[in-house]
Structure formats: C-alpha cells, structure tokens
Length: 126
Image 1: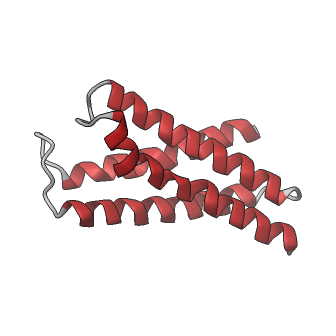
Image 2: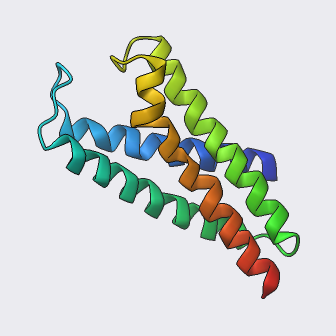
C-alpha cells in the first residue's frame, strides 16, 4: 500500500473508531449516559491504544528514518483528527464553541504527535 494512503487511512481509523465508540455512551439527544469525565477518560485511553496499535503496524514496514516517520505520522494524524472534529463542530454536531472545543477536546489530540515522536526517537536510537 502507498505510504501516504496508509498514513491517511490509519489517521482516519484513529479518529473514526473512538468517534463511533462514543455513541455507546451518549443518548440520541446528546446527553451522557455515564459521568462526562469518565467518558473523556475512556476516549483518551481508547485513542491512545488505537494509536499505538496503528503505529506498530505502520512502523513494521519502515526500515529507516524512524524519527522523521514518527514526526510525519504524528503531525498528519493530529491534523486529520483535528480537521474531522472541526467539520463536526462547524456542522453543529458538537454543541460547543470553537474555544470550548479546543479546551475540552482539541488540545487532547496533542498526545498523538507526542507519542509518535517518542516511538520514532526510540526506534531511531535502537
């Protein structure tokens, strides 16, 4: 598979899987069925787990320039998640302002480049 296509598909999966999982915890009117902080914790943990699994699959086919690859996928997957979320904010799916979005959700995506840079760095030093 083309590397750029793989980056895009994996980035989409990283966003899509937690997005759909979230529906199990929200009723049709948008009310949380569980404590909101617990919900956010679940989403962060699930996103981290999926990101690591996808990173393992991605790096399995990489033979060099691990740090560069980690930086590329970290920034790309961060951008994909942010852009897809902002489409839903703009469409009114998330009932919040952009400022509230960034403080409640958007900044959390910074974990993606953080751990991708870290994985790339560790592999580069190996």
